[in-house]
Length: 401
Image (cartoon, rainbow, N blue to C red; front, side, top):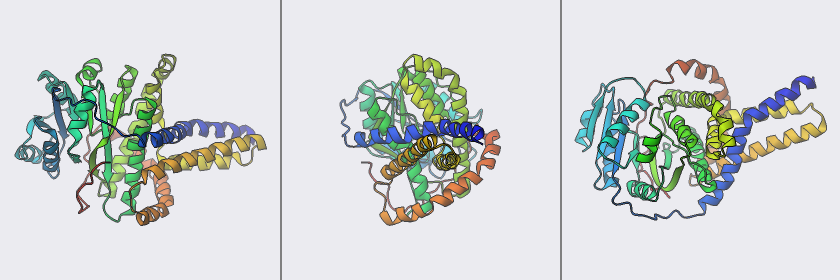
Protein backbone atom coordinates (compact mmCIF):
# COMPACT_ATOMS: atom_id res chain seq x y z
CA UNK A 1 0.00 0.00 0.00
CA UNK A 2 2.88 2.39 0.78
CA UNK A 3 4.09 2.30 -2.82
CA UNK A 4 0.83 4.07 -3.72
CA UNK A 5 0.46 6.36 -0.69
CA UNK A 6 4.02 7.74 -0.71
CA UNK A 7 3.99 9.12 -4.29
CA UNK A 8 0.42 10.38 -3.80
CA UNK A 9 1.47 12.17 -0.62
CA UNK A 10 4.43 13.85 -2.24
CA UNK A 11 2.27 14.76 -5.22
CA UNK A 12 -0.09 16.62 -2.87
CA UNK A 13 2.91 18.31 -1.24
CA UNK A 14 4.04 19.62 -4.64
CA UNK A 15 0.54 20.86 -5.44
CA UNK A 16 0.13 22.67 -2.13
CA UNK A 17 3.71 23.93 -1.72
CA UNK A 18 3.24 27.23 -3.66
CA UNK A 19 0.21 28.09 -1.52
CA UNK A 20 1.94 27.19 1.74
CA UNK A 21 4.87 29.40 0.81
CA UNK A 22 2.62 32.25 -0.28
CA UNK A 23 0.46 32.11 2.85
CA UNK A 24 3.28 31.61 5.32
CA UNK A 25 6.29 33.59 4.15
CA UNK A 26 4.33 36.49 2.66
CA UNK A 27 2.01 36.83 5.66
CA UNK A 28 4.95 37.08 8.06
CA UNK A 29 6.60 39.64 5.78
CA UNK A 30 3.29 41.51 5.53
CA UNK A 31 3.03 41.68 9.32
CA UNK A 32 6.38 43.46 9.52
CA UNK A 33 5.51 45.65 6.53
CA UNK A 34 2.19 46.68 8.12
CA UNK A 35 4.12 48.28 10.99
CA UNK A 36 5.93 50.58 8.60
CA UNK A 37 4.48 53.88 7.51
CA UNK A 38 4.40 54.63 3.81
CA UNK A 39 5.56 58.15 3.04
CA UNK A 40 5.22 60.16 -0.14
CA UNK A 41 8.74 61.03 -1.12
CA UNK A 42 8.16 63.06 -4.27
CA UNK A 43 5.23 65.20 -5.36
CA UNK A 44 5.33 64.19 -9.02
CA UNK A 45 3.54 67.36 -10.12
CA UNK A 46 5.18 67.47 -13.53
CA UNK A 47 4.36 63.86 -14.39
CA UNK A 48 1.63 63.50 -17.04
CA UNK A 49 -0.73 60.74 -15.90
CA UNK A 50 -3.48 59.38 -18.12
CA UNK A 51 -6.46 57.94 -16.23
CA UNK A 52 -8.28 55.11 -17.99
CA UNK A 53 -11.55 53.35 -17.16
CA UNK A 54 -12.25 50.28 -19.34
CA UNK A 55 -16.02 49.73 -19.37
CA UNK A 56 -18.34 47.08 -20.77
CA UNK A 57 -22.07 47.51 -20.13
CA UNK A 58 -21.54 49.63 -17.00
CA UNK A 59 -24.31 52.25 -17.28
CA UNK A 60 -25.35 51.65 -13.67
CA UNK A 61 -21.99 52.40 -12.03
CA UNK A 62 -19.88 54.38 -14.51
CA UNK A 63 -20.99 57.81 -13.27
CA UNK A 64 -20.00 56.93 -9.72
CA UNK A 65 -16.54 55.80 -10.87
CA UNK A 66 -15.92 58.91 -12.97
CA UNK A 67 -17.08 61.26 -10.20
CA UNK A 68 -14.86 59.51 -7.66
CA UNK A 69 -11.78 59.73 -9.89
CA UNK A 70 -12.39 63.36 -10.79
CA UNK A 71 -12.39 64.22 -7.09
CA UNK A 72 -8.96 62.60 -6.82
CA UNK A 73 -7.22 63.56 -10.05
CA UNK A 74 -6.91 67.34 -9.92
CA UNK A 75 -6.01 68.59 -13.40
CA UNK A 76 -5.86 65.18 -15.10
CA UNK A 77 -8.74 64.17 -17.33
CA UNK A 78 -10.54 60.85 -17.01
CA UNK A 79 -10.94 58.72 -20.15
CA UNK A 80 -13.56 56.00 -20.44
CA UNK A 81 -13.14 53.43 -23.19
CA UNK A 82 -16.62 52.01 -23.83
CA UNK A 83 -15.91 48.58 -25.24
CA UNK A 84 -18.67 46.71 -27.09
CA UNK A 85 -21.33 48.56 -25.11
CA UNK A 86 -25.00 48.31 -26.12
CA UNK A 87 -26.29 50.31 -23.14
CA UNK A 88 -25.85 53.95 -22.07
CA UNK A 89 -22.33 53.57 -20.65
CA UNK A 90 -20.79 56.13 -23.03
CA UNK A 91 -23.56 58.68 -22.52
CA UNK A 92 -23.49 58.50 -18.74
CA UNK A 93 -19.69 58.63 -18.62
CA UNK A 94 -19.75 61.80 -20.72
CA UNK A 95 -22.45 63.31 -18.48
CA UNK A 96 -20.18 62.73 -15.47
CA UNK A 97 -17.37 64.69 -17.15
CA UNK A 98 -15.24 61.95 -18.72
CA UNK A 99 -13.77 61.88 -22.18
CA UNK A 100 -15.24 58.86 -23.95
CA UNK A 101 -13.72 56.63 -26.60
CA UNK A 102 -15.92 53.99 -28.20
CA UNK A 103 -14.32 50.70 -29.19
CA UNK A 104 -15.97 47.80 -30.99
CA UNK A 105 -13.93 44.70 -31.63
CA UNK A 106 -12.76 41.44 -30.05
CA UNK A 107 -14.26 40.70 -26.66
CA UNK A 108 -12.07 40.89 -23.58
CA UNK A 109 -10.87 43.56 -21.18
CA UNK A 110 -7.30 43.09 -22.44
CA UNK A 111 -8.20 44.44 -25.88
CA UNK A 112 -9.75 47.57 -24.34
CA UNK A 113 -6.63 48.15 -22.24
CA UNK A 114 -4.30 47.59 -25.18
CA UNK A 115 -6.15 50.22 -27.22
CA UNK A 116 -6.37 52.66 -24.32
CA UNK A 117 -2.67 52.39 -23.46
CA UNK A 118 -1.66 52.91 -27.11
CA UNK A 119 -3.81 56.04 -27.50
CA UNK A 120 -2.74 57.64 -24.23
CA UNK A 121 0.96 57.05 -24.89
CA UNK A 122 0.51 58.56 -28.35
CA UNK A 123 -0.87 61.69 -26.65
CA UNK A 124 2.37 62.01 -24.67
CA UNK A 125 1.32 60.66 -21.26
CA UNK A 126 4.17 59.54 -18.99
CA UNK A 127 2.09 56.80 -17.37
CA UNK A 128 -1.44 55.39 -17.30
CA UNK A 129 -3.59 54.64 -14.25
CA UNK A 130 -6.33 52.01 -14.68
CA UNK A 131 -9.45 51.87 -12.51
CA UNK A 132 -12.41 49.59 -13.19
CA UNK A 133 -15.84 51.04 -13.87
CA UNK A 134 -17.39 49.52 -10.75
CA UNK A 135 -14.87 51.08 -8.36
CA UNK A 136 -14.64 54.08 -6.03
CA UNK A 137 -11.23 55.51 -5.10
CA UNK A 138 -9.72 57.35 -2.15
CA UNK A 139 -9.27 61.07 -2.70
CA UNK A 140 -5.47 60.71 -2.42
CA UNK A 141 -5.16 57.93 -5.03
CA UNK A 142 -3.79 59.97 -7.95
CA UNK A 143 -1.42 61.89 -5.66
CA UNK A 144 0.01 58.64 -4.25
CA UNK A 145 0.36 57.04 -7.70
CA UNK A 146 2.14 60.07 -9.18
CA UNK A 147 4.51 60.23 -6.21
CA UNK A 148 5.48 56.56 -6.59
CA UNK A 149 6.01 56.92 -10.35
CA UNK A 150 8.05 60.10 -9.86
CA UNK A 151 10.28 58.13 -7.45
CA UNK A 152 11.15 55.81 -10.33
CA UNK A 153 8.64 52.97 -10.06
CA UNK A 154 8.04 51.08 -13.31
CA UNK A 155 4.54 50.22 -12.14
CA UNK A 156 2.36 50.81 -9.09
CA UNK A 157 -0.49 48.83 -7.54
CA UNK A 158 -2.68 50.50 -4.94
CA UNK A 159 -4.62 48.65 -2.28
CA UNK A 160 -7.69 47.00 -3.82
CA UNK A 161 -10.54 46.02 -1.49
CA UNK A 162 -14.01 44.53 -1.73
CA UNK A 163 -16.69 46.03 0.49
CA UNK A 164 -19.23 43.43 1.64
CA UNK A 165 -22.86 44.24 2.29
CA UNK A 166 -23.69 45.01 5.90
CA UNK A 167 -24.28 42.00 8.19
CA UNK A 168 -23.67 39.43 5.45
CA UNK A 169 -21.28 36.62 6.55
CA UNK A 170 -21.09 35.11 3.05
CA UNK A 171 -19.92 38.36 1.52
CA UNK A 172 -17.53 38.95 4.41
CA UNK A 173 -15.79 35.64 3.67
CA UNK A 174 -15.48 36.68 0.03
CA UNK A 175 -14.04 40.08 0.96
CA UNK A 176 -11.57 38.53 3.42
CA UNK A 177 -10.29 36.06 0.83
CA UNK A 178 -9.93 38.93 -1.63
CA UNK A 179 -7.98 40.96 0.94
CA UNK A 180 -5.74 37.99 1.74
CA UNK A 181 -4.74 37.60 -1.90
CA UNK A 182 -4.67 41.24 -3.00
CA UNK A 183 -3.50 43.10 0.09
CA UNK A 184 -1.79 40.82 2.62
CA UNK A 185 0.34 39.06 0.03
CA UNK A 186 1.09 42.30 -1.80
CA UNK A 187 2.38 43.84 1.44
CA UNK A 188 4.55 40.79 1.98
CA UNK A 189 6.04 41.05 -1.49
CA UNK A 190 6.75 44.74 -1.02
CA UNK A 191 8.45 44.00 2.28
CA UNK A 192 10.65 41.34 0.66
CA UNK A 193 11.55 43.53 -2.30
CA UNK A 194 9.54 41.42 -4.76
CA UNK A 195 7.10 42.64 -7.37
CA UNK A 196 3.75 43.24 -5.66
CA UNK A 197 1.50 42.13 -8.52
CA UNK A 198 -1.27 43.68 -10.62
CA UNK A 199 -4.85 43.12 -9.53
CA UNK A 200 -7.00 44.51 -12.32
CA UNK A 201 -7.91 47.89 -10.83
CA UNK A 202 -5.96 50.68 -9.14
CA UNK A 203 -2.71 49.98 -10.98
CA UNK A 204 -0.52 52.30 -13.03
CA UNK A 205 2.08 51.50 -15.69
CA UNK A 206 4.89 53.85 -16.69
CA UNK A 207 5.75 54.66 -20.29
CA UNK A 208 8.99 52.74 -19.84
CA UNK A 209 7.09 49.61 -18.75
CA UNK A 210 4.58 49.83 -21.61
CA UNK A 211 7.26 50.46 -24.21
CA UNK A 212 9.52 47.69 -22.88
CA UNK A 213 6.70 45.14 -22.51
CA UNK A 214 3.98 45.91 -25.01
CA UNK A 215 0.55 45.25 -23.55
CA UNK A 216 -0.83 42.16 -25.30
CA UNK A 217 -2.45 40.31 -22.40
CA UNK A 218 -5.76 38.91 -23.62
CA UNK A 219 -6.43 35.97 -21.30
CA UNK A 220 -9.21 35.82 -18.73
CA UNK A 221 -6.70 37.07 -16.12
CA UNK A 222 -4.95 39.72 -18.17
CA UNK A 223 -3.55 41.47 -15.08
CA UNK A 224 -1.74 38.34 -13.89
CA UNK A 225 -0.51 37.56 -17.40
CA UNK A 226 0.98 41.02 -17.92
CA UNK A 227 2.55 41.00 -14.45
CA UNK A 228 4.41 37.81 -15.30
CA UNK A 229 5.68 39.46 -18.49
CA UNK A 230 6.91 42.45 -16.48
CA UNK A 231 8.77 40.30 -13.96
CA UNK A 232 10.36 38.19 -16.70
CA UNK A 233 11.71 41.47 -18.11
CA UNK A 234 13.18 42.46 -14.75
CA UNK A 235 10.54 45.05 -13.76
CA UNK A 236 8.95 45.44 -10.35
CA UNK A 237 5.47 46.60 -9.38
CA UNK A 238 5.59 48.73 -6.21
CA UNK A 239 2.76 48.48 -3.69
CA UNK A 240 1.07 51.48 -2.06
CA UNK A 241 -1.19 50.54 0.83
CA UNK A 242 -2.00 54.17 1.63
CA UNK A 243 -4.49 54.67 -1.22
CA UNK A 244 -7.46 52.35 -1.71
CA UNK A 245 -9.65 51.35 -4.63
CA UNK A 246 -13.00 49.97 -3.46
CA UNK A 247 -15.44 47.68 -5.22
CA UNK A 248 -18.65 45.96 -4.16
CA UNK A 249 -18.82 42.20 -3.59
CA UNK A 250 -20.89 40.69 -6.47
CA UNK A 251 -24.46 40.75 -5.21
CA UNK A 252 -25.63 37.62 -7.02
CA UNK A 253 -24.29 34.16 -6.18
CA UNK A 254 -24.27 33.29 -9.87
CA UNK A 255 -22.11 36.32 -10.64
CA UNK A 256 -19.79 35.47 -7.77
CA UNK A 257 -19.39 31.86 -8.93
CA UNK A 258 -18.84 32.88 -12.56
CA UNK A 259 -16.18 35.42 -11.62
CA UNK A 260 -14.41 33.04 -9.26
CA UNK A 261 -14.40 30.21 -11.81
CA UNK A 262 -12.97 32.54 -14.45
CA UNK A 263 -10.20 33.70 -12.11
CA UNK A 264 -9.30 30.21 -10.86
CA UNK A 265 -9.17 28.68 -14.33
CA UNK A 266 -7.31 31.68 -15.75
CA UNK A 267 -4.65 31.45 -13.05
CA UNK A 268 -4.05 27.77 -13.78
CA UNK A 269 -3.84 28.37 -17.52
CA UNK A 270 -1.39 31.26 -17.18
CA UNK A 271 0.76 29.34 -14.68
CA UNK A 272 0.95 26.40 -17.12
CA UNK A 273 1.83 28.72 -20.00
CA UNK A 274 4.76 30.32 -18.15
CA UNK A 275 6.19 27.14 -16.61
CA UNK A 276 8.72 26.87 -19.44
CA UNK A 277 10.27 30.20 -18.38
CA UNK A 278 10.88 29.09 -14.78
CA UNK A 279 14.36 27.52 -15.22
CA UNK A 280 15.66 30.67 -16.92
CA UNK A 281 14.15 32.86 -14.20
CA UNK A 282 15.70 30.73 -11.45
CA UNK A 283 19.18 30.59 -12.97
CA UNK A 284 18.95 34.27 -13.87
CA UNK A 285 18.10 35.22 -10.27
CA UNK A 286 14.77 36.81 -11.24
CA UNK A 287 13.07 35.82 -8.00
CA UNK A 288 10.09 38.11 -8.56
CA UNK A 289 9.24 36.09 -11.66
CA UNK A 290 9.56 32.81 -9.74
CA UNK A 291 7.36 34.06 -6.91
CA UNK A 292 4.82 35.48 -9.38
CA UNK A 293 4.57 32.06 -11.00
CA UNK A 294 4.10 30.43 -7.58
CA UNK A 295 1.28 32.88 -6.88
CA UNK A 296 -0.40 31.94 -10.15
CA UNK A 297 0.02 28.24 -9.39
CA UNK A 298 -1.36 28.45 -5.83
CA UNK A 299 -4.59 26.62 -5.13
CA UNK A 300 -7.62 28.69 -4.09
CA UNK A 301 -7.79 28.94 -0.30
CA UNK A 302 -10.67 26.46 0.09
CA UNK A 303 -9.05 23.85 -2.16
CA UNK A 304 -5.75 24.36 -0.34
CA UNK A 305 -7.44 23.37 2.92
CA UNK A 306 -9.05 20.33 1.30
CA UNK A 307 -5.71 19.22 -0.18
CA UNK A 308 -3.92 19.58 3.17
CA UNK A 309 -6.64 17.55 4.92
CA UNK A 310 -6.30 14.88 2.21
CA UNK A 311 -2.54 14.82 2.76
CA UNK A 312 -3.07 14.19 6.47
CA UNK A 313 -5.29 11.23 5.61
CA UNK A 314 -2.75 9.81 3.16
CA UNK A 315 0.09 10.20 5.67
CA UNK A 316 -1.67 8.45 8.57
CA UNK A 317 -0.80 4.83 7.52
CA UNK A 318 2.84 5.61 6.61
CA UNK A 319 5.99 4.90 8.62
CA UNK A 320 6.37 7.04 11.77
CA UNK A 321 9.22 9.23 10.52
CA UNK A 322 7.50 10.01 7.22
CA UNK A 323 4.16 10.47 8.95
CA UNK A 324 5.61 12.99 11.42
CA UNK A 325 7.24 14.96 8.60
CA UNK A 326 4.06 15.14 6.54
CA UNK A 327 1.90 15.97 9.56
CA UNK A 328 4.31 18.78 10.40
CA UNK A 329 3.96 20.11 6.87
CA UNK A 330 0.15 19.93 7.09
CA UNK A 331 0.21 21.77 10.42
CA UNK A 332 2.48 24.45 8.97
CA UNK A 333 0.12 24.85 6.02
CA UNK A 334 -2.94 25.36 8.23
CA UNK A 335 -1.04 27.76 10.50
CA UNK A 336 -0.03 29.77 7.42
CA UNK A 337 -3.65 29.94 6.23
CA UNK A 338 -4.84 30.93 9.71
CA UNK A 339 -2.23 33.71 9.90
CA UNK A 340 -3.28 35.06 6.52
CA UNK A 341 -6.98 35.06 7.46
CA UNK A 342 -6.33 36.63 10.86
CA UNK A 343 -4.51 39.51 9.20
CA UNK A 344 -7.27 39.83 6.60
CA UNK A 345 -9.92 39.93 9.35
CA UNK A 346 -8.53 43.10 10.90
CA UNK A 347 -11.12 45.86 11.11
CA UNK A 348 -14.24 43.75 10.58
CA UNK A 349 -16.92 43.41 13.33
CA UNK A 350 -16.06 40.48 15.63
CA UNK A 351 -19.62 39.11 15.79
CA UNK A 352 -19.84 39.03 12.01
CA UNK A 353 -16.45 37.32 11.85
CA UNK A 354 -17.66 34.56 14.16
CA UNK A 355 -20.72 34.03 11.99
CA UNK A 356 -18.53 33.91 8.90
CA UNK A 357 -16.16 31.40 10.57
CA UNK A 358 -19.12 29.08 11.15
CA UNK A 359 -19.74 29.01 7.41
CA UNK A 360 -16.18 27.98 6.46
CA UNK A 361 -17.02 24.24 6.10
CA UNK A 362 -19.96 25.11 3.85
CA UNK A 363 -17.81 27.30 1.60
CA UNK A 364 -15.10 24.64 1.35
CA UNK A 365 -17.61 21.94 0.40
CA UNK A 366 -19.29 24.19 -2.17
CA UNK A 367 -15.92 25.06 -3.70
CA UNK A 368 -15.20 21.38 -4.27
CA UNK A 369 -18.69 20.67 -5.65
CA UNK A 370 -18.35 23.54 -8.13
CA UNK A 371 -15.13 22.24 -9.66
CA UNK A 372 -16.87 20.38 -12.53
CA UNK A 373 -18.88 23.46 -13.57
CA UNK A 374 -15.75 25.62 -13.30
CA UNK A 375 -13.97 23.32 -15.71
CA UNK A 376 -16.89 23.48 -18.14
CA UNK A 377 -16.70 27.29 -18.13
CA UNK A 378 -13.22 27.27 -19.67
CA UNK A 379 -14.67 27.80 -23.13
CA UNK A 380 -15.75 31.33 -22.10
CA UNK A 381 -12.61 32.31 -20.18
CA UNK A 382 -11.50 34.97 -22.69
CA UNK A 383 -14.88 36.67 -22.94
CA UNK A 384 -15.51 39.87 -21.04
CA UNK A 385 -18.49 38.73 -18.97
CA UNK A 386 -19.65 41.55 -16.74
CA UNK A 387 -19.99 40.56 -13.08
CA UNK A 388 -23.28 41.86 -11.73
CA UNK A 389 -22.72 44.35 -8.91
CA UNK A 390 -24.83 46.96 -7.21
CA UNK A 391 -24.34 49.06 -4.07
CA UNK A 392 -25.64 46.88 -1.22
CA UNK A 393 -24.13 48.85 1.66
CA UNK A 394 -25.86 52.06 2.71
CA UNK A 395 -22.75 53.48 4.39
CA UNK A 396 -20.16 55.51 2.43
CA UNK A 397 -16.95 53.79 1.44
CA UNK A 398 -14.38 53.97 4.27
CA UNK A 399 -11.08 55.77 4.02
CA UNK A 400 -8.04 53.56 3.48
CA UNK A 401 -5.56 53.23 6.33
